[in-house]
Amino acid sequence: MLSHKLAAWAAALLMAVTGSTAGSAETTSVAITYIIDHPAIDAARRGIVDELAEAGYKEGENLTLHVQSAQGSMPTQIQIAKTFAGLKPDLLIAISTPSAQALQSTAGDIPVLFSAVTDPVDAKLVKSVNEPGGNITGTSDKQPFGPTLELIKMLVPDAKTLGVVYNAGEANSVAQVEDLKSELSDYGLALEESSASQTAMVADAAVSLAGRADAILIPTDSTVVAAVESVVNVGKKAKVPVFASDTDSVKRGALAALGFDYYKLGRLTGRMAVRVLKGESPATIPVGVLDTQELYLNTSSAKAMGVTIPGGLLETATKVIE
Image 1: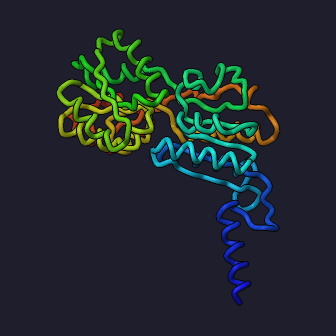
Image 2: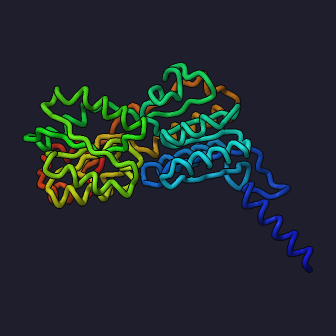
Image 3: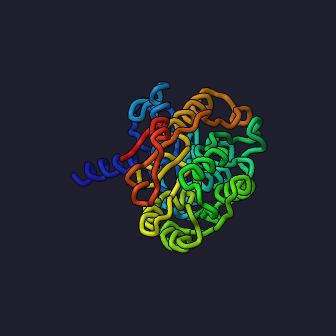
């Protein structure tokens, strides 16, 4: 009886570690990791998995899928990267810049794809967007700030100062703030910065901008987006309009965003994953980007933040949350 129990325990352990059992038809292994859980990252992950399934790579049939969040901890992310590399999967996928950097440093000869990395060149992940080189490529969520700044000036025409909450320790976010600085003067705006190195610090960072900024912009920063409700609450209390760079944040209370649909970005990443699994080298696959931005508006947040949205703008929005 004891030997049977031990055998059952061993089988369960094997299944937990590998995601498969002996005799299964699973032949392809993919590992996905991301720095923290939030809706935009979740949407990208779903897009990747759905695209793999549509191409015939289905978990439980012919695909072993390992998925792990670092819960906002870089040391944990590095450990996950080492563990995943040790599993020797057919493909490693990272969602967010810190996750991609961690996988790149541990992957060895395992191909790596990234998703939702704003500036892969500045983050030293690829040599160029057209010719990545090395063993890594992926998709970028980099978008011009000009249209967003035009939107902010349309909705808050008297704004003189724009506040930004970001993680100054994340290369992706620093690059965005530098790009933002280069465009602000064209719109008559000055910049007030507030950094949060951890999600738990986002609320205080947002509070520090109340009274200093006429509007707040949240970049595609995983640390801040994970706590976007904290920024929204500050905006409502202080009557400071809060704008986002990803559309999922509007569903969570930001007034508006002109950005990408991260599920679609995940689907694009998934199509690239299929190409790599079929034998293409990441070195020769250009970094992918979406070619359209979508406008999301939140009318209840607009009212709470003291903003009137013109009817014409509401008509052009991709989605209006009430």
